[in-house]
Length: 73
Image (cartoon, rainbow, N blue to C red; front, side):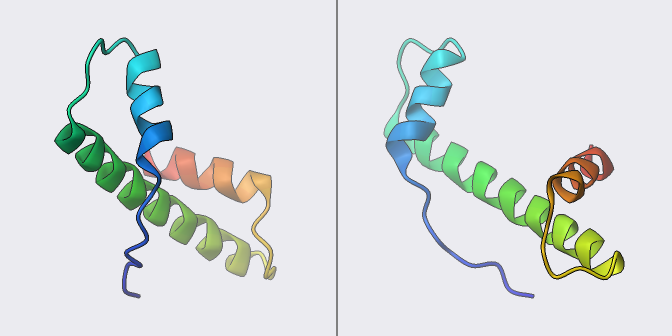
């Protein structure tokens, strides 16, 4: 399955980096952070979808997301 190229909003991601302790954040760093987060989110949702299908469901539930996260760690 091809990865969708939907850009994440940059302002909230910049805030995350600042809350994590960065005093200043370059625009290119925020864009790279967005790309990494986007890839992780896609992989996580793909795994959660697989788990839901395996359980015979069409709906992804909280436990699918938690289990996918553990599986990816």
